[in-house]
Image (cartoon, rainbow, N blue to C red; front, side, top):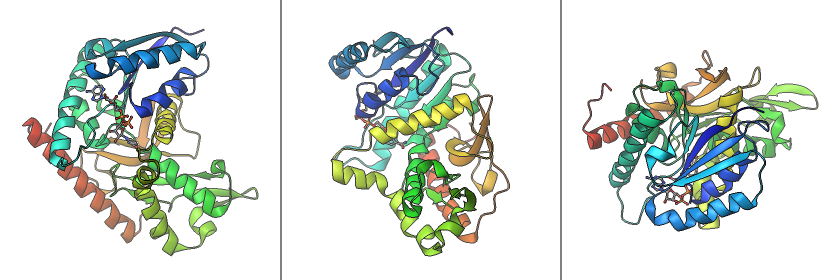
Length: 336
Ligand code: NAI
């Protein structure tokens, strides 16, 4: 069997981590023959809860799990880790302005970027889940200059999974029959869920989702809105935000990054923009990507309608504004 790899989950005492840790430790991300040492990072007030999580992981009796290291010290949390799930973040509290939220999170992700720079493996893969995920990933990457930018990403896979599920339900097919639904831009309500490149297998025949659904008003209207507002709908029903589905999406994201995408299939990831599809450069923008040898590549040459381009501009503008606000909090120059 392979040597164990170290994986850190931040926000390890929180609700997403409660599902995520189990899925990782079961081997669902790095494989059923890859032993793991899990680092659980949270903040001092959560030490008691963290102890409970450690007990439960032990009680799961998971064969791949070689060691669990709970900590509140980022220098321990990130030491020699190969993969990081940055879930912990400052939640929005009543009366908090967007700027206050951004400011609190910018500080957290600056500190974690510095810890990654100083203690993690240089080929670490970092997935930011904590919101605002795209801008947090941008900040984190900037404070880890010796790690390639390509190794930082933000999660829009939950949005992709939600969108794929909506299409599968609409067409009455299993989820596995639908692929290549794209999330563009920010993990926020400005994201653009795009079924325009989607493919579906019906009765053994591959068709475009657009032809199979045959309802452009739905694909441009109710479908987009349902996906954009799904997080709010879950909160309204559950009185807590998405957790099980967020954990599953984080596993899917890291699994595909680690293992690659199947031929002809792409997935959506928030990655550092090179300006593709007229997006602003150097923001963390969700694009369709293909992955091989742990390297992602933005899928090029997709035809976008004028309506789609207009939607990309809206989410791009929001990301640019978030980045500028983050930079002003950090007092950094925008040519970082
Ligand atoms: P939660 O509030 O249950 O847990 C968050 C945990 O993070 C807490 O245990 C807290 O103590 C910890 N934490 C706070 N600051 C920390 C720091 N500096 N270092 C380490 N740990 C820290 O929240 P939940 O439900 O687990 O969600 C976590 C984040 O994920 C939130 O920001 C949420 O908005 C975001 N999220 C993102 C999604 C996406 O699709 N990108 C989907 C769903 C949630």
